[in-house]
Length: 354
Image (cartoon, rainbow, N blue to C red; front, side, top):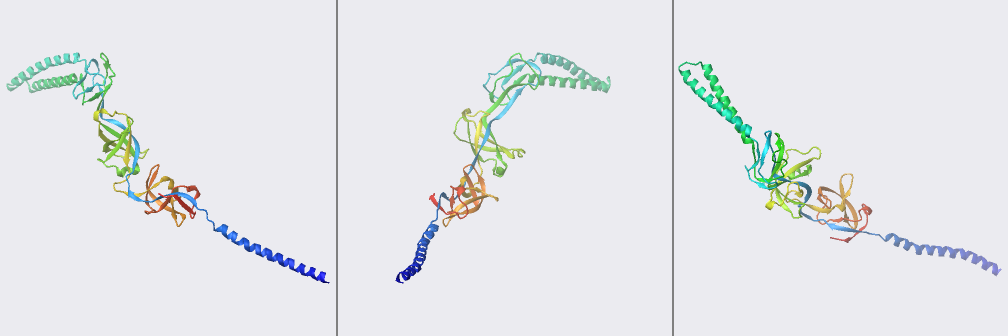
């Protein structure tokens, strides 16, 4: 009986001990679960601190150097060239003879007109005396006067043609390479040579329509040519009256002195044009900090250890920087890395504060 009773007691106690062991094991596991959920992984990010500053942003555009003045020398008469009075590529002064055209026929016609004009003058004077004594009719006198005036006009026309046989430089400058030579027959409008005034050069460039309000005659620009990286200054002198309908751009002309002839017409120029008004303030941020959205751009800032999106307004953007005009305040920590891994509320940690 004692054995049976002991077995019964053991049978009752074994389940009780099992229940107590399971309960104890559950209690020891609960703190481990709480510990694992309490560990928060913070994403390392680079940041920049927002600072308001005076902005002096420029945009680089491609321009072209042009001579101050340029003209294609042409002939006004169909004549043969009898003299080329310059050396190709030389400097010529205003009024210097460039070409001489054949003028023998014009001079012969002038002699003929001069003889006829002398006879017409004598006839006119004689008829004037006879008219006073009513020896000739007034109509005959008038015809003699008109004949004299007509011959005078013909003489003036021939003298003008004679002057055109000497082709002169309209201004001082560098002459190009002659396209015709001694003995060549030229026709009216045929280009003979190009003359350029390179004492100054013009820089022609185009700017986007959004910068039109910033263009003012008298403002300075900076530029460099393909000849060297040295930068020079030029003054804006004029703009086209309207914008190009296709490119929505405005053509601008600037002028600078061509000291020692260092610039050549046709060279390309890199023009640096100011795209911010004077004394403009704003916050510059790297372009990698911008996140495009439905309504514009957003940047992430750190607030209480987590990332928070902030909608911002841009006044201008280049390849490397953007100007923020609203949305940020000085002192904000702006996230500039791991942009694809963060969202609103992501725990972050600044590892490279600036």
